[in-house]
Structure formats: C-alpha cells, structure tokens
Length: 564
RNA sequence: UGGGGCGUCGUCAAGUGGUAAGACACAAGAUUUUGGUUCUUGCAUACGGAGGUUCGAAUCCUCCCGCCCCAGCCA
Image 1 (cartoon, rainbow, N blue to C red):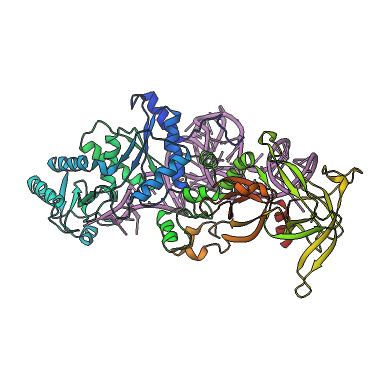
Image 2: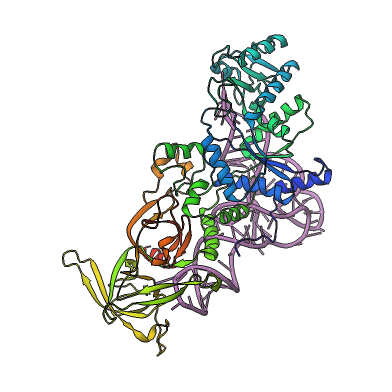
C-alpha cells in the first residue's frame, strides 16, 4: 500500500494548532490559506505548502482558502493564475468558493493605510530609493530617521491621496510605516507600505498606480479572511514582528498566528522561482511543463501521480531544519505508487532483430499476458508472437561477463510469457562488426514458460513481434542537474545541467495493445521503467512515451561496482 | 562584531528528564516467468562541542562552535 493513512501527520505546526484548541485561542477554529504569487508555475516545493495548508484544513475540519498574492503587477498574469488553480486541483485539493485575490482588497487596504496615517503611524516619504537605503543603516548600525517622518497627518493624507491619483512619478514618494529606524530587526526600520508603479495590473488594469507591499498586504489579507494560522517559510521569520505590528496598530480583532517552516530543497534539483524562470526564458528546457522541470505541470507530464507527490510531502515531514531532501525519496514514492497502478506492457527501446529459425514462416500465435503480476484483477491482453521479433540490444551480449545472465551465443533464455529460445547464430556487419541480427531456435514444448524436462533458464527477457509491433518515440528523462546541490555552485547554475537529462529514442517498438493508449496514461514497460504517453505529442498514429522513472536496476549496480 | 532561526544515522525525521521511532539510501540473504515487486536481516553506546544540575539528560543550565535568514520602492 502506498498510502499510510493510518497515522495522521504530526509536526510542530499541528502541535501549535492543538495547543490553540486547548487554550481556545481561535474558538476551536482552523482557517489556513495557500497564497502563491501568480508570477510562475507551482513546483514541488509549493506542493509541500499546499499539502500542509490544505491537509491541516481537512484534518481539523477547518478551511483553506486559495489566495493569489498579487500585489506586484510586474510579472503577474492570468496564465499563471490558471496554471496554479489547475495544479492545486490536480494535486487533489479544493477550495469550494473560497478563491480570493489580494488585488480584490486594494480598496480596503487603501483605507487601512489611510487609517494608519490618521493614527500617526504612517507617513509619505520622498526620499529616493538610494537615499532610503542609506538612511536604513546596516546590520550593525542603526538607521536615521527620514526628514519626512514628522510631516503632519494632513500633509501625509494629502500626499498619499495624490499618490493614488497619479500625480507623481514612480519613485517620487512611498508610504512608510512609522516604527523604529534603530530597530535591530531591519524589517522594522520604517518599512515601505505602498510604492508608485505606473504598471497595469492583470486584474485591476490601470485602476491603481500605487501598490501595497507584501508585509502590509499579507497580514491584512489574512485578517480580512479570518485566517487563524498563517503558515509561511522560514525566511519570513524576521517579518513576523511586522506582521503583528500592522494588525496591532489597526487594532484588528482578527489576528492570525504566523508560523514558519523550512521550505523544501531537493537534491539534484532547483526550486528557486527565479532560477526556474531563467531556465524557461533562456530555453534550457522546453517550457514550464517540460518533463524535466520540478514544476507540477512538468511532473504531471512526466507521469508523476498526485498520490505519489502527496505521499512524498507526508514523508518528508515539516520542521524548521534547513534541509535538502534526497530526490531518491521522491523517485521511490512514484515507483511505489506506479508499481501498484501501472499495467505491465512490453516495449523494446533499442531493437535487435531476432529470427527464430525453427518457427514456421507466416505462423502467428497470441499469448495471454496479465497486466499485473500480483493483481489478476487488472486483467490481461493478447500479445502476438511470430518468427521475427525484437529484443532490447542490452539483453544480448556476444561475450557476456560473469554475472550477465541474459542472451548470449549458445545460451537459452525465456521470452516473457512465451517460449524458451536459444541463440544459435550472430550476424554482424562485416565492416563495423556491429551485431545486425541474431538467430535463435525455440522449444515448442516451453509455451507455458516452463520446460517439460524441468530445465531452468537464468533470465526472462521482454520482446515484441516485428510485424505486429508499433513504432514509437520514447523520451528518456533524467535529472536536470548533475550536482547534488546546484545552488551551492554559484550564480551560474546552467553549467551544471545534465547533458543527458533527455535522450530521445525514435526507433522503439511497442506491443500493439498500446495503439489507443490515452493521453497521459501510465504503464510499466516490463524490466525497463514507468512511462506515460505524452499528453501533448502522442497520438494513435504517432506514439510518444515519456519515462517517468526507471525501475530499480540491480544489474546496473553490479556493472558500476565492477567499474570501480 | 546587530537581530532572528537551526544543529539527532549518508539524507529526511520522531523524541519535550527515564535510558535513541520510522522512512529513504546502503549492505547481505530468501522468494520470483520483470536482475521489478515482496519478505528477512544488518545499519547512531549515541544526539555540534565542553562543562554543570540530577539516581538518571538528546531533553534542564552555562559557555563555545557551525550553518541559514534580514540592509528590494520583490514575495
């Protein structure tokens, strides 16, 4: 069983929530939210957050809102919103009618800002961006107060209204919170609340030319939605005092608890949105849904199941340790899920022609092949057999090393679900010495897969009938990066891309049952790996399969050890 | 050299004073018409380090060391 639903997840966040139940801090209510900014696609790191926030809501019979944190018009688009909604649904979570946008709160937020000015807790500052930085001081020296800090409330009200009215150029003024320029916490040194951006917003158009900053908008959005637990990642820990400051300054009754956890890092993978955008924009991958991308769209196209991803998120846990999860765990989770669900099928990726000399020309047979070795309920299909078949080149070696027990001259193996065949001749290209085809004889008495005389065979290999099989393209995907921690390698990660992250095989042959394989359907190619039909490029007349993940391969391990 | 966090097996991660869960990885073996699956077994005298409190400490105290985050009018 791939799901361990017996024990509900437990972690420090759930501990805090349960403590809140005991102290009745939120009247027994649990309301979370998933607040992505629609400026990119969701990736496996977001999945961790989605599973956490929605998972908590389900577990404690609360709610989890979907909210677009769209407070910066630059880079935010409806396309990203659509992709985010699609991906969260695909992962298996729903928000009913609770889809919200920070941009829907712009009026309310503006009123809150005005209220802060009225309370003497915010002011319009006309320092330039550079000056603001200088005035802010640094990690060891306190900042200096802005010369605009003590302007009158009336003056601030007037200026802020004119900022909104579009009377000033970008950068001319900002609205700042009046907190403490000497705070050891940099985020409390009179943070910017609003900046002027004469940039159209994908939802509000040109209605606004001032936009709220994250710290101001986020806590208030949470408060407006009556969120109880505002879960975010570790880098916002420094911002928590500010989160609380805004809510306290406005004396809001709805005051959520911000809780921070460690974001997901995965070995051999990059999960920085900035880097992912770079990979897409510079063309290192085919797009956000390239099967090599750690995006949910990419993983979906690659053949990952939502169940595997959710299970992965449960297993990695939630804590505050800055950690890097081994990508092998993710791969284990898909294999575990697909092992149960994927029908077995035969495909030959690098065909080697095999002629069965003693099998009558023109004769055909059909073998009944079960779709799953441990689950008869998945049924079976007929697989045609004839005199000429293809096997994988990897399954034949003219000069086999010790532990190789597949086909070799003079050796007998079993064809999966079929006869025993024995290699009697090898035909090579006289010029190159490359093996062109091999000849075998079969034992008609072994149709059951066993020899009447009880003799054993060391290996069973997969095959496909030459005339009956279908041509197919197979895309072998591997890890995008060669190094375990690409981020550690400095600013230019593109030099660490794995040149073999994609290998396209165009002369593959697959068994005929795959002729109408539905887009996105998943299979195990026996002895090779898990594959799915490409949801974009595959069709009945042009089959294209993506490798999700290979099978565990102990033979490859033996080979590697031998190398060393 | 300010502030905020974090340090338990190769990688994640339980543990909250009573004598180190689990998973992945790895290793060995069994079963097997996938060198797959499944199963069995092994894998931290030890919890960043040093002191201290205690009958007893990964858990409490002190000091030290290491790593991460913060000086966007990004989120």
